[in-house]
Image (cartoon, rainbow over all chains, first blue to last red):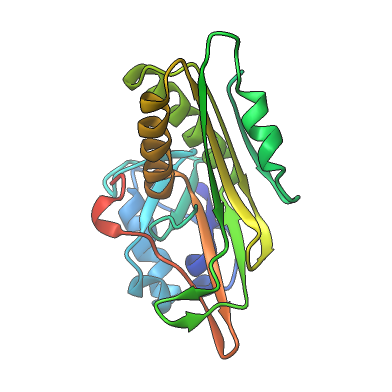
Length: 79
Length: 143
């Protein structure tokens, strides 16, 4: 199945893209998707990541579904 | 009226404060957050703000709902600027109107603290000799 990965700021720079499609196995978790992406983009693993699934904060153990939007970003710094 | 907005245009602070005022209120506290020139002794040339916009809007609306439950206030307005900002330009305005000032001050402080912790917006500081995406305090992050 496929998910849509969104990246912002430091994570977008690490991956060299702001949005990409990722093929993952059924019952893959957010963490396994991150591990998969980190194998292709080693600099991503240097960051402590926050996760959102479909625009809500989510734990690394969250199980992903086909078509989910997985956002990966560093601790927020607005204001 | 409560409101939350993201904008790439300069923010008119006075209009933000005026938009939240209902008849039964006696005080509006407005935070004007703007771009600092020196951070820890290093000079910033300008900032670039980026947001996960739909989630940022949701998180700001959650803050408005929460703050109105926890403080004796009437209305709240939050506007955060995105894109490139020069030194001294306003990046965020939070206005809280309340019957009495004490609750408005406390609620405004709570809102900026929570916004900096939970709303998915990031700032890049650009210096004469480089640039860096600022990472917030991981220890207080929502996860």
